[in-house]
Length: 178
Image 1 (tube, rainbow, N blue to C red):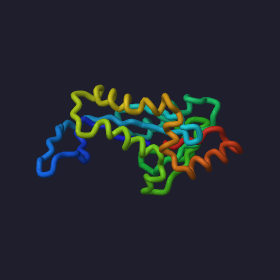
Image 2 (spheres, helix red, strand yellow):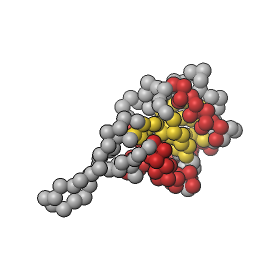
Image 3 (cartoon, rainbow, N blue to C red):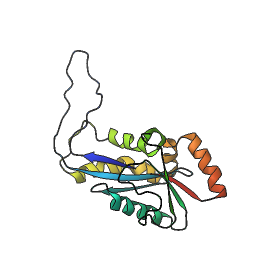
Image 4 (cartoon, rainbow, N blue to C red):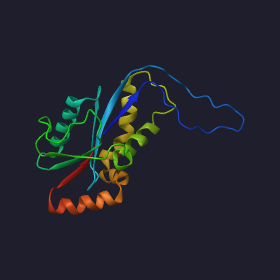
């Protein structure tokens, strides 16, 4: 899946004293980049890439990176049906990558959506001078996901983890949600 991180500030709930207005820094610069990511739902590995936009070719680039992370594995990628996601049978889908589409409008079924929320907690109510500064904060926030592989499993619904474990023992070694 993908998430947009921008220099345009996000505001979330802030604590403050009753009756005292809370001042939150704001910025209205329209520069952004997209973080593409996937969680492996059996062991919790993760894969992330900052890319300048979204599109079919960039999705293919991310899937190629994902396939290269474990070239011997069969990767089952669970995707929503965004217009910039490749479809099963597209020639740009790398070998050993299989796409499974979620029903439309069902982000709650995609475990990586929780990762985006977690990452955005580090960027909301803050102002960043450059995209590089923003990227550094997001990267640091996501570091536990690739240093502690089990961390990604906390985002995975227990039923998805159980199903992937059962199927991976019989069919393929890796199921990935992205």
